[in-house]
Length: 315
Image 1 (cartoon, one colour):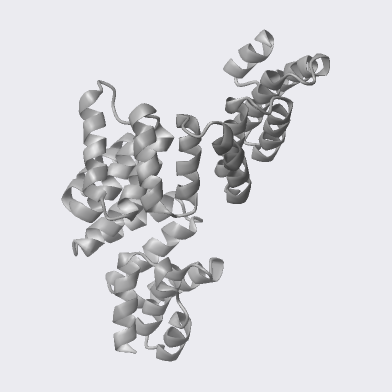
Image 2 (cartoon, rainbow, N blue to C red):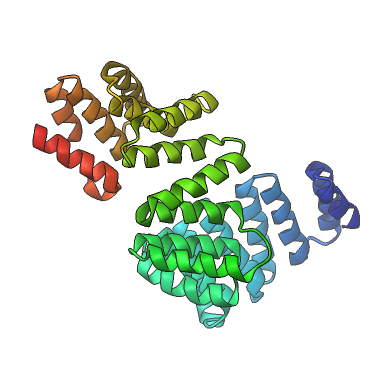
């Protein structure tokens, strides 16, 4: 096991796995070793095998809280809500008031998009267990329930109480929250992140949307151009580029780009709206009308809803 841990430190996960398997051969019912192997599979980004090993650890030690909560969280990581709920039901019978069990419940509610309930649970968890994953899901839950200012206050409190810089993901979330409440502050944060991340395409993408919201079409298109050069095959980046082209008046090029976006992901509601808008700008009313029929408005953000409303009025 010591050799395995050294190899993990060196990121030699295959040799580490061989050593762990040797230990398991001699100790097949040792839950700690099985759980350690599960963590190796996570490092190897093999979530299915991680779950299988964690299931064995849980089966061998059914009353051990840590193995079952880890299994539930692995199911949540995979997006398997029903399996996570089954593990939670067992946990809730034996460890109802435990903070780790409350975390599992909060994350289940979050994944189920029950954001009001999720925010209540995750806020209670975060006060006792201020880890990044809990914080990010709490902030998103607050954002989804129109409490962006409370979410920003939580981030500011964390920033003021620590000598360490905020994690990048938390700064990103803060910028996202400011997008709703203070676009200028959002632009300042994204510009800082652009420098830190050497112009990551998602940062550029978000800046493009913010500049567009302010009516700065040139800056919006410049950022979208930079993003598409960095990630030409990313559909979300292509979509933004198409919308920025359309806003700058390049209707034919925008139609070409957004048609390809729609073809790549025909079920995404916002892409349908953007493509329909391009069709309308290129005088193809019938196809635009056909495209927006049956769109579920719940699948659209505020910007796409506004665009859909304008399209509908023009048709």
